[in-house]
Amino acid sequence: MKVIQIDTATPNPPEQAILIIYTGGTIGMVKDPKIGGGFVPFDFEQILEKIPELHHFDMQLTLYSLEPLIDSSDITPEYWLRISQVIQENYAQYDGFVILHGTDTMAYSASALSFLLEGLNKPVILTGAQLPIGTVRNDARTNLLTSIEIAAAKKDGKPLVPEVCICFHDLLLRGNRAKKLESAHFDAFQSENYPALATIGTHIEYNFSAILPYESARQLQLQPVMESNVAILKMFPGISAKVVKNLLSTEGLKGVVLETYGSGNAPTVPWFIELLKEAIQKGIHILNISQCIGGQVRQGRYATSSLLLDVGVLGGSDLTLEAGITKMMYLLGKKTPASAFKKRLVEPLCGELTPI
Ligand code: ASP
Image 1 (cartoon, rainbow, N blue to C red):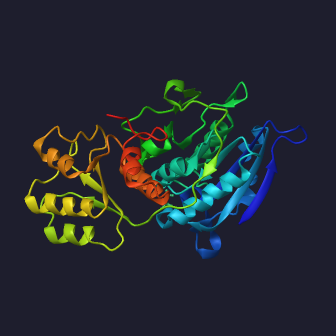
Image 2 (image 1 turned 180 degrees about the horizontal axis):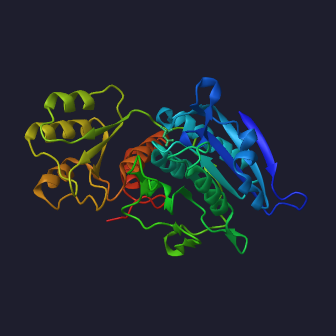
Image 3 (image 1 turned 60 degrees about the horizontal axis):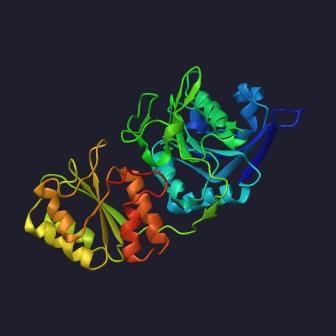
């Protein structure tokens, strides 16, 4: 791990202290002539040279580079725990946190961190880029600068956005409501089921009624374990009994997200319902999340979802897949007893779902 301190306020005292945690991804890449112009992670010691606009902030910026730097496709629950630990260890000294992360799994990481960082009341802003800092035309520079500004934003000494967010292009989104929906254009992230926390143009316009309130009594507490014995079972016409049976009989399996159609509908064939029932009786939790990105799961609305309700499948309302699977990993990691688990999974813990 490498730590670089930059005080852009010198000789005056800095107004804010922001910790930037670099994990890898496209944002931090530059062309390396030594390897024929291919992209390599950039050494953050040169950050002021690459982004001279940082000088305009009166801040103490600390850059903390995690090792190894990864493409976010390689992110793991252990890595989420490391990021959370860095935030916990530095929580008192900083006003806000910016996490530089690859876009591919950013919505999973933002969701996971929103659950792991219990009692958070400071901004944790994840950002990344579609084009690296080292290219002439890029979104990395503005995404980073805007994220720093939002992480430092305060009113009457209180942070404006005391929650885990994704800042990307022209939107600030609640992290556990966001999804990556675009791999080419700059507006990569959307949140169909929850309004943006801010829109970013010539001004940053905060949508205060959508932001979680700051509560001074909240104490950060880190949950140290996540359960990985979980799976996602996506419905498609023609899915076979063999595939479903094999997945549900995976040794040690503790939770499954069932990705259903529309408002939570799934095939009604007896073998399917029977396999779900058997799994639930064995103690495996099954959470119903829709393949649609907008709208809510409403089990019981159609006959095709009443059967799921009857056997004990839990309705995930408007949870994203990313928030659903990480919430399961978090609650299972906490060893939440079964009855409390069922209740907590379907109620909002940090703004991730709309209760039905
Ligand atoms: N594959 C990269 C990653 O997620 C893409 C990106 O950073 O945008 O790490």
